[in-house]
Length: 207
Image (cartoon, rainbow, N blue to C red):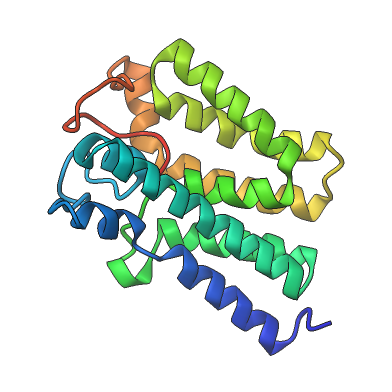
């Protein structure tokens, strides 16, 4: 057991670096598109989908989910479940605030979701149903993402999550909600774009 040792802290740093992996830039860049300058400017799966195509968006989504899943899974398997939680948080933070790109990252939905699938699969399944239902009804992907962020901590608690697990989930959900501040304002004013919108419209889903 290396829980709490310097080696465990290295896992935390590695999880953050995993989160900084520039999946959107690499995938869209192969098509000559910079997702930080095209469309909404958000380096996430939805903006890549809108500006570089469906296949590119799907690749970015899978990569971003994988970042959260890999960090949480390795932290849990190689150190302990609590450190799986911390690595989940670190990877999401790395995606949202990457030091390699002047702290200008994505919105954290997919990366956070990857960790949920590893640590709380039942919650992840419910989150996906909520996202699909809300996004389809409202036709705004951002509202689906916001709903998942709000729902995850109480769902984790309802499924018997520990206080530590709920606190980490609240921190991650708060990070995602802060990154959706613009979307929340547009939703409140009725100006948020439809998920059928073009690449030049505001972005607000997996990223």
